[in-house]
Length: 483
Image (cartoon, rainbow, N blue to C red; front, side):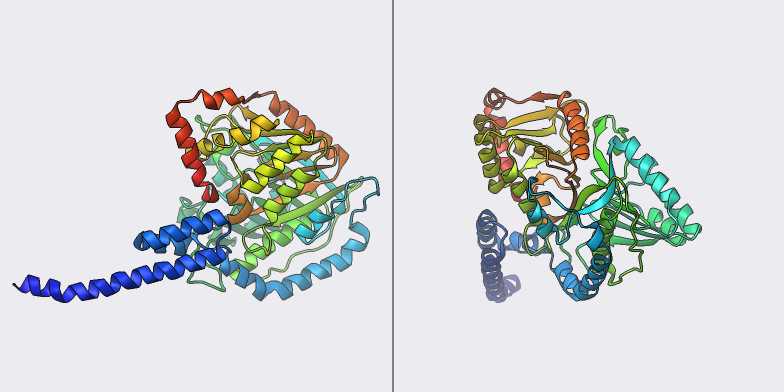
């Protein structure tokens, strides 16, 4: 009797709570319609929030933001001092170091506008192919630093390579070199506290990059990650590319070995552009602008290099626009290498048009998978690419993780962004663009060697797969916006 009375009293309360929950779901659905990144995302979130608000509301709070709000607020707060610093550097160096182009060359102004900085001359760059060459160069740069080191990676493991980096940074810090170390809290989720504490004890400034900023410390936005891999020594040299810090990047993972990846070292004014990208990330997390050097060592003969950072705090979708423009500009050749191929419709359409106007469009992706869902989703794009002449190659000699492109004989790029929606809209990324014939030829030779280790896909391969596999590929593609 008492239980019946209790339930009778509880029923109206539950009714009110359920009504409030659905009302909150409806409000969130309207917010999704107004702010979602794509129409597909708006529809998906709206239906999810209206039909299943109990599950959808927490997910929307974590994953549903269109912009990394805390970073945007921190950027606005710090825009004036950072802009003043960037302007002072530009006033000092750009009159002599801004790259020039002849009228016969391709107009690359759009990339300068996207980057909010120009191509600079007086650089010297070299490709670093695979992990041994990359970390040999980075470790040499760390050992030679005199004043400070800026170190930022998406993934840092507490393994052989991770400890080698740790011990080098500790040694340099004890010798009086300032070391700023940043890692992504999601990418490095298993990095133990003892690893970080050893760095701090030696005087290294350690800062995770996460969804909480100094400006908005209570908001956690899990979906936005800092995918950049940056090392800067004294503002004079910088390293950017696909390698994270882990033994697998040296080919020591039996399942994915050998690991195929590319980094690039740049010496000259472009290193200051990489330094600015790091500085903005550091400022957003800590509220501090470290005192760094802004001199340059001009290299001769110089190469023209542009530093192009991108991320979900940008007013425009910088990374996606960069790739879209590269595809539209191509007239003879467009080779793109990415471990993940889960693009949006704009990229697919641009690739189709490039192939239809006679461009040699090639995409290189892995044969092996490190993310099964992404691997499955890539098959769903074959029907939209192969029939129009886009050639897709699967790299067979180990796992392919490099991010690079080659456009005609005019432009090459190496960076951190994949050809997927996460890099376009959710991750903080950075690419270096090279308008230099020698670097283009070097990249061409590297990619030709990689294509020789690939097999070319044919439409029959997808058509001959079991219907369950083809269904799985199409279902996986539905998750493209967050893969």
